Amino acid sequence: ISMLVLKNYPIAGVFFVLGFFDFLWRYFDASSVLAKYGTISDAAELFNEEYDGVTHAHRYRFSQIVGGIIRNKGRLVWTWIFVFVFLIVWFMLSASQSSSATITAEQRGPRPPILLLNDFYYPGVNTLAYPTCKLTKGFEFPVVDGQSAKNVSSDLGDYAFLSAMAYERESINQYTLQEWFGGGVIDEVDYVKKWREESGTQSSPVYFKLFSAPEVNSAVVSVRGSETMFDWLANLHLWFASGVAQCVKWLTPFGWIWTPIIPDLLEVVNSVVESQKLKEQGYYVITSQFVNAVRAGYGGANYTNVFITGASLGGGVAMISGAQTGTPTVSISGPGPLLPRKIFHPPLTVESIDSNVYNFIPERDYIARLGGRPMFYQNAMCIASNNNLFGCHSMWRSFCEINYRCGSNGRPVACRCVERFGYPKPIQNGTRTFEEACAAANETWYDMFPDVPN
Image (cartoon, rainbow, N blue to C red; front, side, top):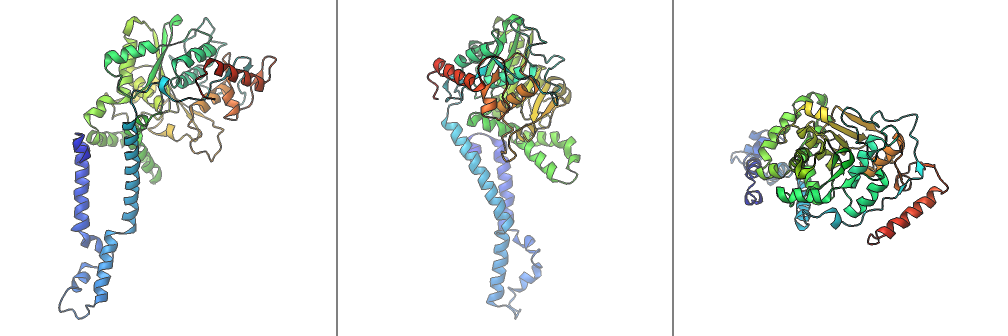
């Protein structure tokens, strides 16, 4: 009924059909299931007046059997599973409706301080430095502030940093961008705000930033990951079906044979249950429109190089938009677009994904394995404890992993990599100890941002 009220007729039709068949099975067709307990002729004899063996015990036994069919253990288990899923979805819908979809980074609650040190460095590791620390073939991060690409940063580290900055407010980004890049990169808050107002998308819960490097006519669109209940609903909408299909494939012997047809199955299911409103309001629809506008010179900007990045949900949405718009995309722990590629509007091709998308996937990061991996990806290590189920699905942990293994290469190091995630202390390049430097950075942070609770 609620689906009809919301005019989501495809979903309402699915529930009606399922409910109709369940009604038939429960009230009219118990005899067919009774066969597994005995023959139907045995049941008929119980009510035959000429049958001398009819007793109250027999009839009680018949009642018990039929009751056992209607209330069997398997059916009870599945009923509770569906009730649990329903309650979770109901809670998410209720929470999302009670919160504002237009909350910006400036209106969010406090986040941990970003303490960056310039007088310490990571040299990188000799045993295992990821081949994709330095990206090539169109994915190179733009060189800013007149610095040589040979001695400054790793492309992967810069993208990981900007994917994290999508969560922060403008005043904080002014400080962190200056510390990280040494100038030359700007958080284009007004540019994004103006486009969203003119395009009528300001009410959409999707949140993203544009970081520009005017010196080299380059820009990076950074899509924020899951932070609000709307974001979690977007996760379910885009990747829940893929996750179910992958679980069935993994649990079924020779399940890999289903891989080629999973995209087609998801397309069929999605065409039945997805409403037109969902098609129009999908996160990736808006981010793709924005990327196309930036590439077309919206607002008089003439960016010759445009890139997309994001972490978690933001990384998944970034990969979809990157494949749709033909824009180089670097995702950190994003669920993949390969399996659900046919449910998007317009649909993606394997070629568009493989030529425009890169995904950084830590080990034991189960979220990043949803949807299938693109051709261009990097399996990464994770030093989180094995009993930390989602410890490897962490934007900042991935940032620290890249910073440590690839080397800081002229960029700062973050105190949280050591204090929170357990990475080795960086090498001292001055007179302060690491503890003294982090304490001083913490004091500076709260002097600059006194409104952020300590």
